[in-house]
Image (cartoon, rainbow, N blue to C red; front, side, top):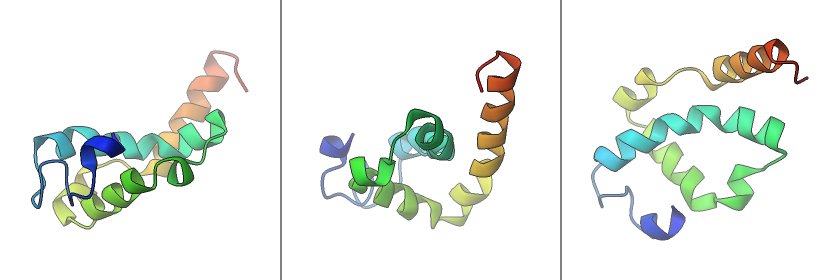
Length: 85
């Protein structure tokens, strides 16, 4: 993903576009990925995390996404239900 993003502000260039809108919701899962996958997404993919932060500066994007902490809590509950703790 970082190779495709390169040094562009957004995947389509200077303006947010379809690819950005399709991908940015995955960022709400980062806390769960990092916690249960023993990852540090920012150190592994710094350009991607910087892109997420740019997208979230747009009020329309930030308001449309679920709270990452609530997504994390959902994953915790699902893990309990299926017996992974």
